[in-house]
Each structure stands twice: as C-alpha cells, then as structure tokens.
Length: 258
Image 1: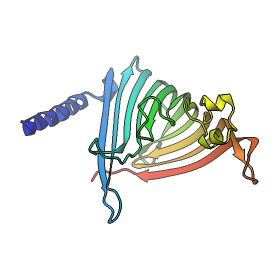
Image 2 (image 1 turned 90 degrees about the vertical axis):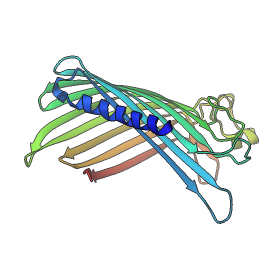
Image 3 (image 1 turned 180 degrees about the vertical axis):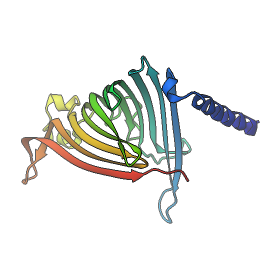
Image 4 (image 1 turned 120 degrees about the vertical axis):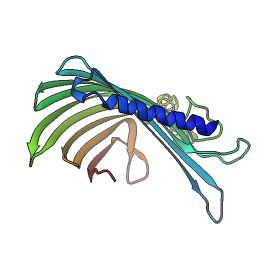
C-alpha cells in the first residue's frame, strides 16, 4: 500500500509541473512555485555518543500578474534543523531550530530593460537549546522584519540575456527572551536586560549581482548594529560603545544540468 501511495504522489507532482509549464510564462496570470528538500545525516564516532541530524526546507510561492507590467510575488519559507530520529527516553539532547518566513514583493516593469522591486518581510525563529525548553520560549527565539528595494537592469551580452541587479535591505532582529547569563550571575544586568532584548539588532545591506547565461556573481556589504550589546574592552569589561559587525561577502558560480 505504501509503494502504491508513493507512486501516485510522484505522478501527481510531475503532472502538476507539466501542466504549469504547458502555458507560456508571459501569458500566465498565476504562476505557482514549490520547492522542498529533506536531508538526514548521522555521525558515528569510534568513541562517544551517536548523533543524527536532520534539515528540512520548504518554499511555497505564487506570482500573480496584475497587468502586463505589474505583478505581486508572495513566498513562504519553512525551515527545520536539529537532531533527527531519537528515542524519547534517551538522556542526550541536541538543539533544534524552527523558522517561518514570509516575503512579499511588488514588481513593476518600468521599461523592457528596467524593473523595480520593493518588498517587505516578516519571520519568526523558534529554538530549543536545552531539554527543559519548550517551543516559543527559547533563549534564542527571534523575530525579524524589514523591507528592501531592488532595481533590475536587463541587457544583451554576446547574444545572451544578462541582468545587473542592485538592492538595498533594512531589517530589524528582536530577541525577546535573550539575556546574558554571566551578567545575571554577577548581578550586573539591568532590569531591561533581565527582561530580554539584550541581543536586539538592526541590519543594513547593499548588494549587487550579475547574471549572464549560466554564470552568476554577487557582492554583499552588510552592517549589523546592536541596540544594547556593548563592546568588550581590552581589560575584559564591557565598555560604552555599542557592538557593530561588518561583513563583505563575494559569491559566484555556474549553473548547468547534468
């Protein structure tokens, strides 16, 4: 019975995909998107405990074309990572993470060669870092929300379509339950820090990407500033300067079918 259900499920997925691709992309009013991945790994050391980890990711989206030059894209992402199969009566515990992210984007084709894409996002991340924690009250639980603005410049290069994209992103990341346990132990935390929000941060990012034929590349420059977290000085104590992190990321690759 299980084999029969598996065969029917596979056929249904391929049938849905083939039906969607039978209509030219330019003439579709609604274009659905679905992608799911599952990974299971195991670590078997010669000494020590056995560990099994799992990662599950799912994306569901819908592109709705309002007019020829206006469209709305909505995307939902579900993610899980942590220990995989383990009997409930075992004493060992490994951390788990569960995330829900919602993204919306408005696409406006100003010209055949230029498109503008303002967007907004909201997400929640739940964690369990100890056996006594329950979903929704984890120390590292967080909420993220923000907006973005992107411009796509389309042109031809050596007989192939190319796209140059510039994007700016601003996001706010809140940790409502996070406190500094060491500060609490030493009695150095204020009431605000004891109530959480110590790790709250804001992020700004500027990135530029280039896609041509099967090649792609991107450069990202990101700045993260912390609302309450201070920099540790050379003497080992917290100073008055707010912590600030800067990242420069370079990406590149080539896509092809095997």
